[in-house]
Image (cartoon, rainbow, N blue to C red; front, side, top):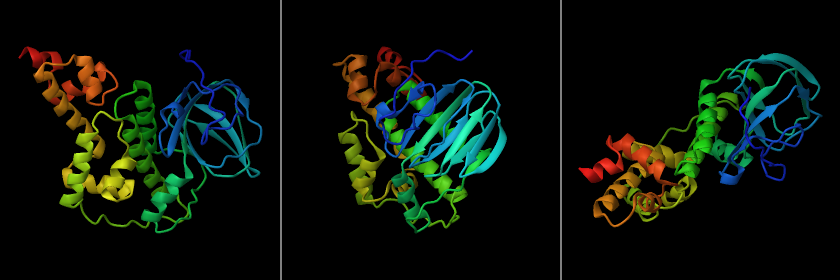
Length: 297
């Protein structure tokens, strides 16, 4: 039996699945205001949709049991087994309908067209974005990104916006490389950040550690796109921007804990963690001990 979760009404949100299903999503990222991507999870009884179209690309993932699914896109009919983990790439502005004969559990990733266009300009040197329609495919990377975003949303960890934007850009690049009508024309990375730009970014991170930093604002400091910034930052530091921010938050937490002037809960908030348990989790993962153990030693 599927676990009971409260439905979420996203019908008025941009880049959400249209209201053609009988049940509302049981999980949604819209309240998190992620940039470039949104996630919705649906538990639906057997049924079918009316004909509909959407103005953005949707990636579907079956995270439940296998089921037979029928669809027609612009009159082209298909019927396939949606196995557990099956991925679908739904084309933009195409009239379609779906039918299924058992209860289903789907994860949907709604992609902002601007996210794909921005990455296409850098990867393909073109602002024309057209992804190929795929009904049922196996793609481990898309599956990993989808499940990682679902886990991030459910755990409400610190740095969620930065993490989601990083995953969104990775997904966009993967889709453009593998499912674009223009194919892959990779532009080589031209190296890491200059010492000046790296210092500006690091100083900005340290100044605003308590905030939910976004990939867009860090990239803007370096005057690069999020895609090139992520690659250049990792080339310069050896780690991703998200991981670097977490490490700096833990270092800040150590300093505040050893000063002994703040409670653990206050230290967590001051370092950008959403609550104390998130501080404890990351602290133990990176240092091998809990904050309380550090204080006792």
